[in-house]
Length: 287
Image 1: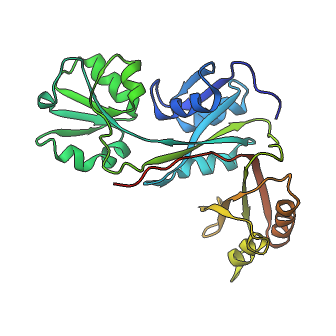
Image 2: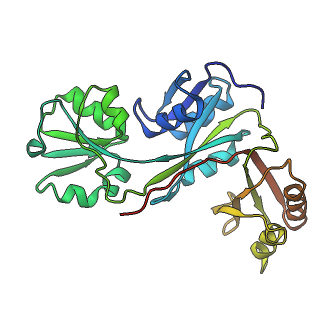
């Protein structure tokens, strides 16, 4: 990968204050220029067309699982994964300045955020829960409507962006809540030998007994750690699947190259999305 622009233009899904924006800033620094997009499709299209330098999208959440749409979009675009970041997702209950918790009668947020705060919301008593398209967007909605008896669930940054007040920090039921984001680019990167790397690939083969077992043996025989495996339907071929695999190591390492050569002998296609620095994440204890 060529050296990134001094102020890269980064596409992300959501509105200012979204968790994807926080991940973008963590990956590319406060000097990065940000390009909010309405959908994940728009993020991929913006990078593919050259309107943005890179894009940042979530791939999996530690509670809700994989974001399947983004796995499909990876296969549909000629883009490369060049970085990853693991973000702790902590929801704040946000309202107008001066509003007290007892005044809240409605709470807006993305359905996933509402589900992750179900017990905390129930403890509020007689409060209506309303789904919105975006966490940060729900804060903007409450502010623009002037609803002083309403609150939103979103990030601490969203409260700052829209000039709102935080009634409760860490409102989520499960504190160990993390989302893994990846950065996508038109050009691949090559992590140096000193970097702890990860590689993402996809493959498919003829559906015969033992196919997946044999494919995964290409990694097991070489003691390569698989960090993620996901399957998605293969379009145009009912009950056939593409397998997505992340493994520890870089294509700069001979053992990883040999594993992929072995994998190609057993499959109909293999696609490498990229080798990139592995995120250095610190976990908190579940409560």
